[in-house]
Amino acid sequence: MNTRKLITRALVPGAVLLAIVVIGGLMGYRLNTTASMPLGLWKQGDTVHRGAYATACIDHQTPTAAMAFERNYMPEGECPSGYAPLLKQIVAMPGDTVTLTDDAVIVNGKPIPNTRTNRHDSKGRPMQFIERGTYTVAQGEYWLIANQHPNSYDSRYFGPVRASAILSTMLPVVTKAYPTAT
Image (tube, rainbow, N blue to C red):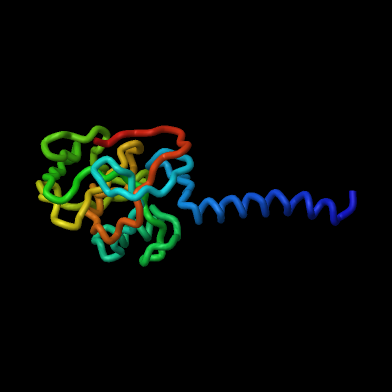
């Protein structure tokens, strides 16, 4: 087989895949490859509400953000911090009461399963997290949790996110699993 045919056979599938990714991105589709939420294909939604999944940029000035960035908890991406947005579920909205204990995140008196705060990350390094206690969610803020994976980096560690940090809501299209935090 000649070199031209080999190159064509190698480049055409790659070009087709690239075109699918670019067109899908323009149409609001995203691929989640992180373990903290269901793996698979997601599509942008338009309504921010309790129980919705959302992509958000965490504030790089959040006390735990430096630790998260240093430890590569997030890949590089389009957020102002230079990192990728996080995909998490909205569990608390303005006016809600969030209580943080070592064993659970409790929203309006209801514990969310699988939300124990880890004192150490998967490599045994001490974790930074916001102070345990009870918080009233302020106007323009949301609490985001991902309780599918025990090591998820979410509001247990960085606290609430501003509404302006939410890029979009996301709807699962084809995913490996579909957990519910609320």
